[in-house]
Length: 288
Image (cartoon, rainbow, N blue to C red; front, side, top):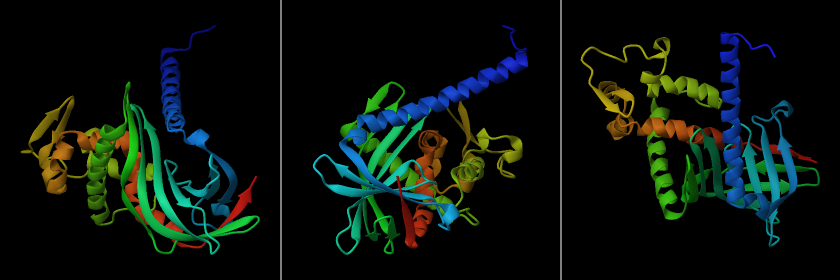
């Protein structure tokens, strides 16, 4: 077989590495679902879907599921936020149901994060033979993370240790996204790729190309801090970020959260968008 030229060979090698990395993330996510038993403890009874081409603001899927004891519940998924599932009780005769949890699972190149966050909120779900009508008019409140697990390289954290770390990360993410949303002209309602392209240069100008760096982000007398193999511009941190986030950024913790939990940050930042998408009356068609 003829060996490709050096440049072509390098391109093929890089492509293979990217495919392998992507498959690893997918395998980690599937492993999380297998480990928590969710793949085997319940079965899908029916599936309903609303698609953008049918006039809906977002692509939404609703599953009616049943566990081993016969109890039924509903699972709501938004295509724009594939890392999360909203769980709720099965509607009563009047169509009323209540939200119980947000289930999050997302992989990264180091492992995966998985948690269940308790929710408080109600909605209405009118179920017909071939359609369901979903309405969430009162909003949904996130309470706190009640369980979860973390896989990082070959280390798996469970129980109280995982719960403590996940809650700490949630506090950091909430503080970060609260500040991000308050900035003038903060973009809302975009897909995750656009979200990442906008915010990465703001949060980490040290990591992006010169043309993407914010104007004037680096000044002559700036002070720097080194952590591991990174140098962080402490002066930029104090000029741009609230004091609550100074240490988080200057120690590299913010970058670690970004690399290991970007979908989580995106969900937290766009929570109001999620609520607005669910606030309108949504008609979902039954799928086989």
